[in-house]
Image 1 (cartoon, rainbow, N blue to C red):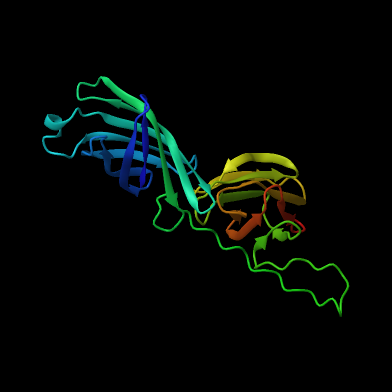
Image 2 (cartoon, rainbow, N blue to C red):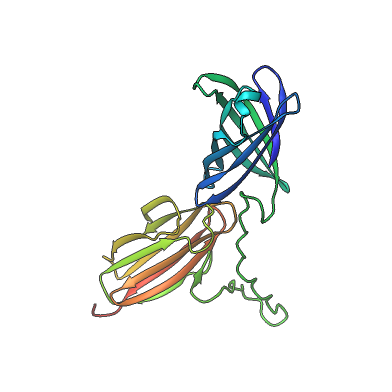
Length: 265
């Protein structure tokens, strides 16, 4: 990833970083092209936070033999943010530098551009939207058409009705696809039991009492993350019976599950 480092004295020079990621950790190297044409190569280590869109790395040591004999070594510590603009990511932030005696030797800003493709460390594959609803036969029927969605899928205007045996509901909620920052609120009979929760791969579990014969559980899409729509995987446990449901909505929309206790329970 090629960019520009702008020093605190107004000098600017090409700056290149190459790295691989493993989870949130990154390792690689940097190359700084000096004003006199010399190049300095250093090892870098750091981390990337895809939820916050931040990138931080530190030049840990020189990879050039005898570099300290040819130039003054100044190792950078950089803190950057990135955002998608059109077909490219814009990466920018600040850096500070220390010499081999741990004394300040530089500070300034860095800017990079990175294409938005599958080779980019920032690339997130878009989620496939649910299949479109078939077009209604308006020549035969004039009634409002309920959107058609896959089985066990709920969205605004399409709810799920469950017959229930027990007096409680254990509900698990998680992001079953690409972790992109979907945020949900869960309501039990219109009262919040989980507020503005960011979905992750691990399941978040709630134990909900069912005090009424009919109970509504509402999933509110607070944020669609990097790749709309907001998608939440939900598993509801009725004793030994499990009900798995997918809820998808645009931001601000709601999906509803209606639980009705069986007679005599």
